[in-house]
Image (cartoon, rainbow, N blue to C red; front, side):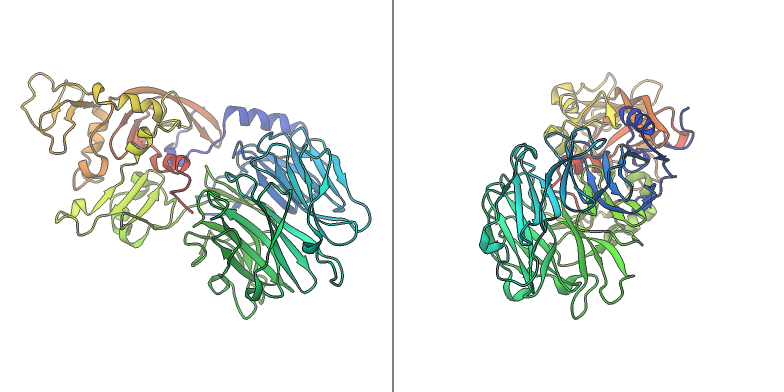
Length: 594
């Protein structure tokens, strides 16, 4: 049955037919927690599992596939946390790592922390890939994102000292690689490798957090964990040991490292912008900080953008004060993402699905998820409120962003730009960005008009070629727009002043939409721009909470947006803007965030 409510693009939920089939199959293995009514973006929700979760991981090859390490076994969601199925009774503790080169290969830690476990079938069955003797305690595991078959494991080794174990054959054999001078020899009591971080896109780079008696340090590898050197942070946190690490950047020399450190549960936050050579203290900027600072339990980043980081933290003085936060300025300021009441378990209890801008948190109450949304910045609040902003723009998907010296903000359906002072005409002091031009000019291999589509931006690039423009129709007066036929179709020349030139015929329903004074009181040209393609019939699939729906729609691209016509939508929503802003975020991962 087709949904009867408006099915605007920004309300669609990504649940493909293959995902639904997988959920049905999983249901035969264990309990499936049904999807709840989906809350608004910007709100934490949970659909299960109904138990404590110590780690969560997002499949690097499919951001709708999420795994959770629960108290009684391993849980899987194939629709971005909308429903969970228990796929194994094996108890995994504190860490899950999905191999980006072979997503069926998954690694975890046994419940007694003595073994590294491996699943070769997506988490259904598990076997020990490594079991330590003596005082071995396994703390963390990561898969090298650049080197197939290479993984690193942080342990307190058989002799009770910190160690990193390395495998280059997907866990078949192991080598201890941390040199003696980094293991804490001579200290009192056990030492540990507490956390590990790698950097997708930068070959060989890895970092390890090491805890020693009354202190700690960070170690760095430039050869996928084969050799290591120390990166002491000195007087900034003399007694603290790493509790969480994350890295971002595009080169080994300029990688940004975010490091959460603690001593006796009192924490600090440091950042390096030169791969650990020097450090800055971000502790005074933490949302929770006092004489000793708040405890940073989890850190994660968009690897392509060092400015942005995500963190879970709790107040040392008042542990009930907890939250998940994001920064878009290297930790100078933090913004709370909704409000997550239960504490996120660490150090692998926060996972980011970049394409769908969804954060997942492992808590004692299950996995919570939040689709990141931001309030409208002050420059655009009046416009958003007065122009049916939810319809025109959807929700905010970025904080304020500087672009060519102008304040801008990205929304699901576009980018608003503050051009105050550049024109005496108030209608041109706020403009929509030329995102469509960027996407089709790239050309981006993303679907247009739906989650699956017979038209991509790469295909749109062909339709937008100047050779596809049509000559003014018979009777055209030489300037302006011109009605064609009885259906409201209208010829629009491709010139900024609408003087006579080849252009495109705007389909009648789109022309009616463009001339709505409630949406475009200052006119459509600066909000929508000139048509750059003919109206085109497209078949799309939209993913909704109750399953996928295939529609035959009409699509027409303009300089600043893409309009779609879906006759099966409610009357007032048949014409709407496509999710150009979200598409832009997917393609240009280093431009839109956090």
